[in-house]
Image 1 (cartoon, rainbow, N blue to C red):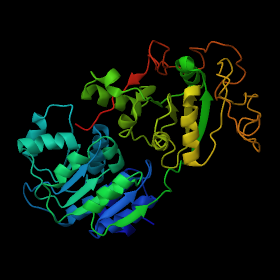
Image 2 (image 1 turned 90 degrees about the vertical axis):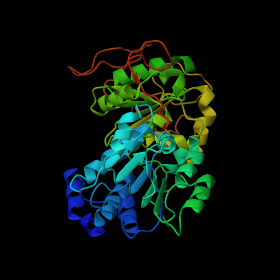
Image 3 (image 1 turned 60 degrees about the vertical axis):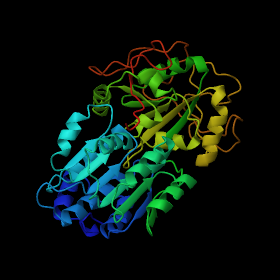
Image 4 (image 1 turned 45 degrees about the vertical axis):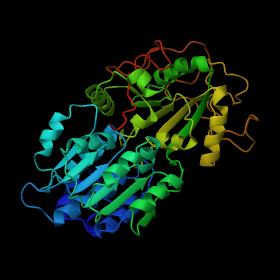
Length: 439
């Protein structure tokens, strides 16, 4: 199957081809024809499935089929939960619509509102916005949504988690009654179904992956460690294995650490991380929703999430688009129940790896590494010395039996400095990212 066979124009197919894509993903193959017909859609898709192109491509096609001469009005509105995701979606709109006479704009908080007001004075066909800043414009009467033909709610589950349901309903109230509605969500909770019932009319239902299914290409590991030694273990793993582009998740409240981070600083940090100039990026679950790197190699759970489903979202940042990836979790005894909840959710045991030199609370059972020779062996029950598959650290990790982790050596010449072991609960050399609520 090709993109052209789905009914997309030559201009859009050309833009897609220039991005290196030749075949649609399952969500794209199913969603694009439905959207092109003008019907409502409820799409279930985990991260890394090509969901964004699944709605931007047909959205561009439908608007291009009915070109408006002159300034025109905002004809499509895409609502996203975070600033980073808004930027990602708007970038996709620009890339795939580069050969079409359509104009797009992104709108989010954390930046001066005046340049956005000025941009709204010009032509804007497609608006990608976060709910909070969009409401600011509506209150100031600087945006007109009375001609919107297509509404997209992207990552609706996360928007509900962040408390945006009231804002979303206020936005919907000012939209034309007759319009096409597209809702995408990684999970279909009762709250999502309730929202969909009030928004969608006879929607097509597309779900491309079993709920809470983790990608087979992601190699998952648990590293037992005492709570106070997590920072040392993280530094050890990064330096010993020469990891680069490491996305580290923490439950630490964003405002406590990132409250003084400007939007410009956050955007710069993300750009440097994407180009591998920045070795480690520390993020909360909310911030990571806007991180879209096709071949992100490493995700680390510095702390396990309180909600098991968030584990699936976190590790879904790696193992995307057919690429392999590694998801490592640093687990202390306090998180044993969280680990059990995660394994129950994904219906599999996660291999446990003990790193020599890091003493572990004896209540967390795990097999020692035997020079990697017992990797992949299984058969017994958990915690009985043979039931969990093992994976020794790569790139120089074998053979070390000492206590303190190395802080150098083995790193390629000219590579960025690894994360350090400074104060605080995360490596001091890492660049912090804020949670970025969509205001």
